[in-house]
Length: 225
Image (cartoon, rainbow, N blue to C red; front, top):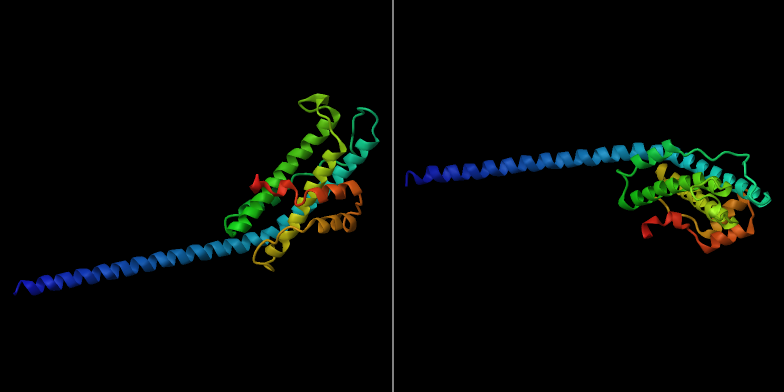
């Protein structure tokens, strides 16, 4: 009996020590998790502030792409035979800093917002490649020479895709300024056509028909491919 009580006491002490140890470990884990969440929130505020810059740069890039493509189309329509085109405006500069800011904002974003931002980045990269390939293809300087037949529908598709980037950039502003909790969906086809009419003074009927056929552009539906 004398040996029993010390053993019981040791058992109780060990059990309480274990409980205290578990309590402090859990508290440390909870504190670490709170710090991690707070850090993500701080990063999110910083990155969302940078998103205003990114949205502005991306919007201007997309707008420049539209004007560049319209200029190319006008010169394409006016040329005779296979006369080389020398556009009066240069190909818009790819907005690397804006894309970098968008990339950094993916981590602290919610899943759906992160998917939307990733979609915009990928779409911008594809738009860049298309613009760089278009003029060489028109002039027969591409890898396939004059075997690539460029028609006016190429321009309509590319203008529509650039307009899609422009309207998607619009949806970033409210999110970046913390006026909205999430990135809003892109506008409908009528809103897109109204932007061309009012903001850019473009009233090409065939371009409007291209928008009616496909909106949002497939360039902005990459996750469905």
